[in-house]
Length: 351
Image (cartoon, rainbow, N blue to C red; front, top):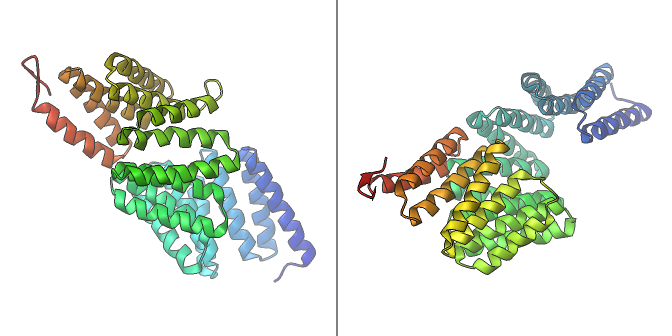
């Protein structure tokens, strides 16, 4: 049964209202709004609207912390969409389920679902979903340490985002691409991508994104030895962050200032800044930022000749990377641990 033009307009108005509520982060009300649309769509036998409503309800439940309910809803959305031949909506439902698995820290399960969503999105030419799913898989590959694979996925995400004109999605993918190129030690390439991200962020006028890009720009600049330019990037980032907000970006800025001081040979200042970054990460319960701060602290203490303390900081960093399933960074920490273990501090074995 096809909905009349008036009924279709009424459903669209309900969808608009639900999306508006979702945008205010009132997750319970958004879930109820999408549930009402689903019931209406069933009465009208409008499968396409029903699967979209289920997916919206699943998103709201995920945000409200009702992960099992959200997963059941997105699974149902997928089943109905796939069996009815609505493959674009089926792909999007798979992606929604993947995001729930991601939140649950089931990264392996999330990766499988993101891959399935991406394959289906490619088949139906859904560039919006290609941009999102490729980026999400790239992040997981990045954490695994599969940096080359992550790079290719970020490039695919950017191409799809540009085809849709989604500047914000392209910006985030450029930022991830710049960071993974830094992981690959192709730092000139990393700087180019991060400059592109900065151009887009400035065009959008989003202060937080501009600050985040500036903070990330410092990383390849430090590795290239462009210390003054790295400092300018960190100054620009810090100037854009209001008060005590955005703790993750603040931790990154402090940690990179510590690296800057270390590279300039000011080890006491470097240690002070690394400890501040560590304390801030602990206070905000930011696992990866804590691991990164400890990693930097270990480098500083190694240069100070305090190898036992360097080993202890690096071992804690390694444990945190493993806990966060950031296995690529854990492997790098493990390699440094092995090197430190074979060293001695004042004749005492470290380890």
